[in-house]
Image 1 (tube, rainbow, N blue to C red):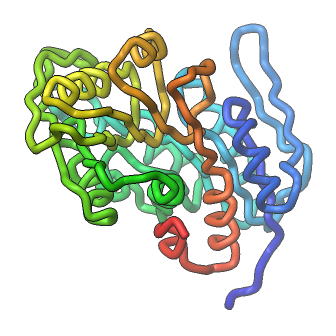
Image 2 (spheres, rainbow, N blue to C red):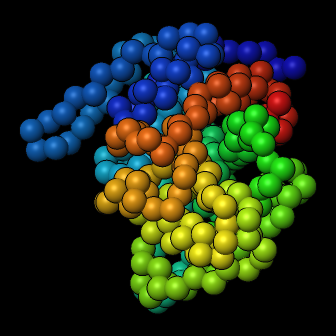
Length: 313
């Protein structure tokens, strides 16, 4: 095994709640940092302790606003210029991941641009969870530790009675995710065929699969406006499902998402805490990903396997 160096954990402002839990599981305090804000809106993060030669981990989800991404880039640059030994950007939720291809003329491939920016800033490694598409890993020319939320959701599901369950995908993009859970628990599989008129607006849905009298569990990587998820839930209820709950890694929940969920056919929405909580809801259950990330950080530092953390045991 290679010799180990000192570990330093720092956080951006938006993900401090999660970083503190990660540091607690890891067994050390977060590194001291000051964030200066100038009157014109510019920011200047200052690392208030030495990082020379250290393994440095910066924890920050790149949710809106874009200042969260900029703060992460500036912290990475500060560490690089302070002679950090190895810099890892820990990005529980990787923003702009949905813009991973040119689906119409004259649009950016934003996920690739963000990958380039992180590399140019000085990151030696990326650690994240549940990209919108697995192939985004190929946008990076540095190692990517792509954690899976199944390590968090499987223990939760094992405590439930799934004898009448059917796992389902709210659209074609999440079929692979739903199929994994269906095979793991040996249950049925259903799909909603979705048609969009425009971004964030679903025009129609068609249910594929047998769901009558079943407890449907929708699987997706993120829930944003909640339009797709709640329309899928209603479509399954219209086909005779007994109940519908959903399980999504990233709870972006923008706009009127909370109201839409509370007034929907969904009985429950289970998410992780990769994104800061907007507000409380009786229908939303948040599971912490702090322990998973702390273990992944330790395994990275000790040059051990990351894939060993994927099975949820």
